Image (cartoon, rainbow over all chains, first blue to last red; front, side, top):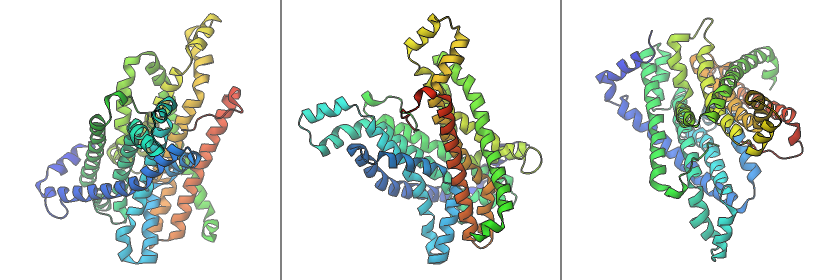
Length: 231
Length: 218
């Protein structure tokens, strides 16, 4: 038995491509979850990471939080968030509950990479900027943040890929998106649907990865395009 | 929490299964990444493609890899644990390999030359000098891989092989039994932190010359 063949055959069926359960609709849903979670996580984690890196205070907390975030099992977090929302907010609250674990898992990589990017800025560069009369905020905006940009983007990329995977898993508690095919296929023992869903998720994850690599070429100054190491 | 005490035998069983499913892949990943990393450190052209492959692999969600292995290793029977172990070993490999290469490359050239001057051949120099000096960086990668592997095993519960992840599925099916879900979450975080602490201890044992000095965490 072949693993990917049934998945491609399933993808090739015309009925998968329209309607509320169709691939375009599910893909849009999935992208919506990823976009919203990433936006909220970035709004929280980017300023925090830049500020902590700029002031140099609270670094230990950031690194510990990142380690802790890696240890959190995504499935458990998703099920728990849903269960708590169901218990305290009723079924109306569950529609918003999925966003909490997605944001929670996206924050650590964004935070730690922004922080480490700031940490990696050459002290001589900062001294030179101060010597030229830059104030703290100017230094942050014109020197530190641009130099830290490759690692900041790496953090966003790691978070985005994490959210793509976690949103898939969240289909287990009723979230829409591409994970639906996997969970519904597993429930009905339809391996072709499961494999088709898995293929779609892989393609989305690789597209997100490629988009961030492209973004790096577009917005990172040529002099800074050194190989950013994953953190 | 009395629920946890009443079900301690079941919890111990799932914890054992969880550790087996999570740590075997890390061990496999380490065993493969050492020779591969040595090759990458020696032949520089070999490294960029290996790094690209590992970053592409890292982007692929674990659940999808589990699913692609189902037709080969199955959901039941003697090879069922391979459905999790093979993908997780690949992730571990992708995590540890860059650290092996970086660790070996960071060995100062004077140290290398001193070892050669003392009569060390290439193999003995690698085993006695270069690898020991790379230990802190390799273990930093191993810590990330171990913690990630322990957390990822629970995803396998969606296909019925997931150690403590079973508690999430069971908790959901018992009308969102919050206690069971929370216990599963806490146990997974706990064994992840414990495994991390063990690796820090191993690093201290293997690098006595660094004692008293702070070594960078991943």
